[in-house]
Image (tube, rainbow, N blue to C red; front, side, top):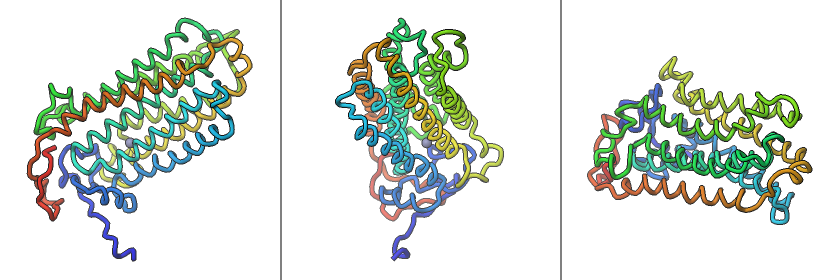
Length: 360
Ligand SMILES: [Zn+2]
């Protein structure tokens, strides 16, 4: 039975268009015009994306289990204090799910690749807002609770998600309508200036992360004396922060594959390690937040703003709408791109059908 399923071929870097190239990854590329079925089948063969997919797909189920447990055990419809936790857990389910879908279907075409990763960036941006909403509710140090900064923290975080998603999408193709071109593979900024493009993308995610963590960094690294909320949860926060910085380092440096191109194509390259560190970081962050929520609850209920829809579910919903609008803005010009005959990219990938395909 298994022999009836023919797994798709894989290719080397010279056999696929430049838009599909990954820094220092030489082999294991899937066909640049894979069908949806081929993409799903590729989950069960070793390609340079297989572990990228599984390292986010499996944790999605773990985070979903955490969310369902909270929904069933803590009855959030009767208890608004839990709402920030629900929003945060939802964002923790969405970002690995969007990432695993993006990695699965990104080889259907160049434009599918761009759109897939636009959604991936939007989901990461939503996760950053989820973190801000829950930090505002349970993490702010005692002495900052109900301050002006606390009051403006969530609105600024919402604004940051717009900057984050816009910059990350811009880093792939430039500005929609103004800089997009029919021959996108040759014109996009990532190809013309990969270092600047990478810098923009790192900045797009580092900036909201650093902003969201201002109250936590102050609490665990700078604050001294009364009102610093120096409790047993801090050790979990340290673990999360260390993993978050390791995650950023791996994403920015492309280590270890940069030291030995071609040696980590299938197992051990930076993107897989980046996924694993991000998930472990989220796990420790979740533990820390749950512990803060439980231990600080009596104090927060009396001293902080009441938790309402306008500082939990409302900004989250608004952020989802804003992010979808930005993704649509960057995707629509791609979807309306002209149709041309499929080009043969190098000696490798060829499809039996010669039916017209989009240029990008
Ligand atoms: Zn990824």
